[in-house]
Amino acid sequence: MTHNTAITKPIEPKAAPAVGSGLHDVDEILQVFRRMTEEMSASSEEFERRVAVLNGEISALSAQRMEELREKERLADQLEGLLRILPTGVIVIDRSGRIQRANPAAEQMLVHDQLPELTGMVWSSVIQIAFRPQEHDGHEISLHNGRLVSLDTCALEGFGQLVVLNDMTATRTLQAEVSRHQRLAGMGRMVASMAHQIRTPLSAAMLYTENLRKPGITEPQRQRFAEKIQSRLEHLEQQVRDMLIFAKGDTKLVDRQLSGELLQALRESCAAALERSGSQLNVLNEAPDAQIICNRDTLISAFGNLVNNAIEAVGQNASIDLRVYVAENLITFDFHDHGPGVPQEVLRQLGEPFVTTKANGTGLGLPVVQAVMRAHHGNFSLFNVKGGTYARVCLPFQTLTEASS
Image (tube, rainbow, N blue to C red; front, side, top):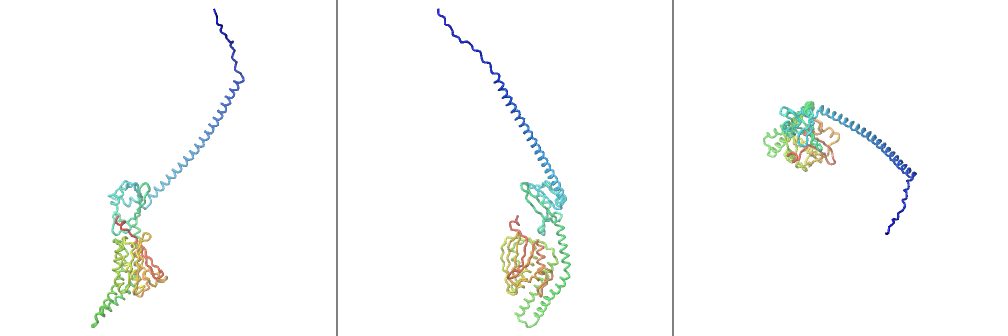
């Protein structure tokens, strides 16, 4: 019987870990821990420092914002107070056309029994209730109580519209009173001057009438005397018309005339004077669609004075150029006479009443032109150029499109 004998090796004992190596690993771990602790501590301190800085900045920014808010509140209070005491009416309209805000001046102008308040009302309805336009308003608008206001609008970007109302009643009344006193102050001189100037053509007309009564005069003589009488009577009529315009002063702007209509009326008015002197009126109308709110009769009379002045400055066979054009939002009428011009020392006085360079002049022609232009919110100027004198009239106007809207 065979027995297998297992060969076994002796079991070797495990080596015990080295004490020195384990201590080295613990030191490294402790060093890493300490380093991480220090870094975390430093990071924490930096974080706290940054938080403190940010808190300071936030506090400063918050204080700044609060100060700005307080400043805006102060400005809002100031504006509120200003709107309350402002004599000008201010109305804020939103994009839907409703009134969001109206100051006391606006309410005082517009509020009445049929319109107890403005805020929340539709602006178009307020216009129908509060405004009563009249033919003689000119560039202001009459209200329900008869007062005159000027109206201006301004778009508010992204919101709506701002409407500003100015009560012009006192201003217009004061202007009328000042003008009236000035006219009254000149009435004495005017009466004396007109009495003399009327007597001269009247005496001439009476003399020609006596000649007509003489027996045996021929038909050509009769025709010549009749023409002279008519000329003197027309001169009288012009003087009386100028006197009335200058003395009256309160011209009502009740007519709407296209520039072409005014020019045609001027041609008809001056036809006799142009024919007698053999003169021509050459018109160039560059603004045919301009419509003028005016008093037609007084405006034609003023233009007629300028044409007559041009004829008298040149004499017989005068060629008078009249150019009509738009410049700086005004319609301009330029009268050019191609005459000898006017001396500067005389030119400075020609606008004064009763100052004249003509033997038979009244000195009212140009003052009448100035008075009519003031009544039409326009202006008048007279100046020399090479080859004559320019009389320039500038007036507000509307285009046909603006007038229809």
